[in-house]
Length: 188
Image 1 (cartoon, rainbow, N blue to C red):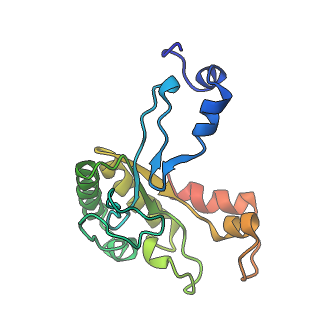
Image 2: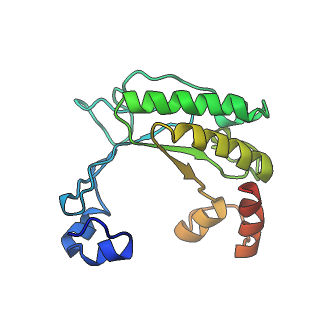
Image 3: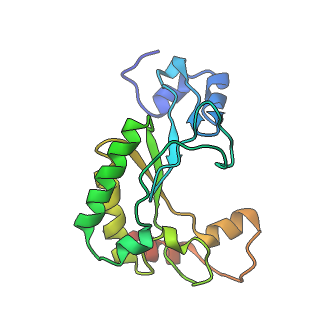
């Protein structure tokens, strides 16, 4: 395959079976290697406030088994209470260094959901109910972490989850303009 091609040109030269490999994992925490594309296996880890790297000798898909020792950083809600992007940048740098030392290529975080209800059980993972503060603090974390590994920003909007799974119990209405006004502002 011509390695100077990018994007759609590369995909047009990939066999269907190799494309299918891109949608599955080698295990719960690693992607499959696709030699035809020159793509190595990529190891991911939960971790906006501490990595959860499973012991390779005893992995499980629930994260209940042994994990490798890792630093437990304050969760996003606590870091956001400082209003200090430099502090969050230093946590991002430390998280990136630790991820690299544990063989992690992508950290699944930070979460940038905007807090809308105190009843959300995952609010501790999100920075703030303010989109501007959330955007600035998440950008500091991602920029710092990306010096060592890739940070995957997670926006698991409750409205989107409800629409995709039908499992939400709270009535909610949303539209694209609302989403753009909330999330687009936070990134500027």
